[in-house]
Length: 278
Image (cartoon, rainbow, N blue to C red; front, side, top):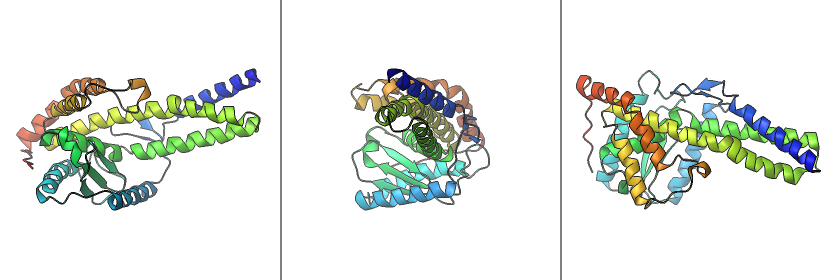
């Protein structure tokens, strides 16, 4: 029995590893190969539905000044997604809906279907227009890079693998099999991709903010603020779906060699100088 369970585990991790190398159906804006098997139209419908449900459950901020501030920053970033090139949103979104939610959570999000949500608690960490642009640019990057589609696709593939291996071995080891797959899926496939998505969105977002005229160095400052708000407390990076604050700060600072020239061109050549204020 123990030997059979070892065989099951081996097959699961081989299968999980094969999913890692199956990213051949497309490429992210950063050139990373990825698999996206869900139609964009379906992802957009899912995003719209989720957003509508959230609007029905969460208080919406009605302050005109706050809404104008968030829209000013967001519109400057979205202008880059309407241009041709690697930041273009090709998921079929014609226009984006932006909603500010009256909620203390230090968070923001973007969903397929052109939906952006910003929680008022985010202003604790995003203390100027540049830092707010870093967050919103990061969230938009998730959508234009089809990260949501990629995650759903990966989950579907993992489910197929689980059913296939279960069929090979029958019901004898069903409990052990599904338990092993839960561990295998979390630490062998889904978790690393999630961290990879977050890091990729950080860099895409930094480039977008630079091209929009926001100071790219402020992206790292945002995460310094985040770290201060958390009191320095963080769970180990290996167990998190997000990179640690320190990792994000280092990656964003390292990427300034790419994003700073974009910022100089945006401000000096194209005179893109957003002036968004609350």
